[in-house]
Length: 101
Image (cartoon, rainbow, N blue to C red; front, side, top):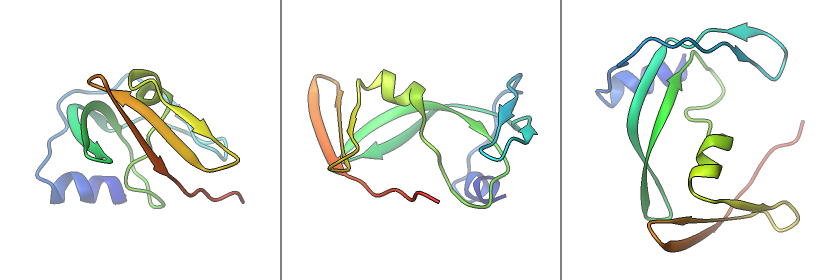
């Protein structure tokens, strides 16, 4: 439910219904509540518009996936936890953290 709260807090509106069916990491299926197009996210100063599927979630606010990584030509170095990407002909990079349970 965290993302719905964030959608409301930011004054965003779900624009379209979703036809997707998402399988969670634990194997449960859920249908997104809807779609928001051109949601601007900022990574290391780069402002990138993305389309998001709004789902009920309690453990995260925004989960960025493979579609974004393809869009910004991203690379991830697992050994060094280093994420690099290109947006509007400029290169960006940042260190990251992740959890492995």
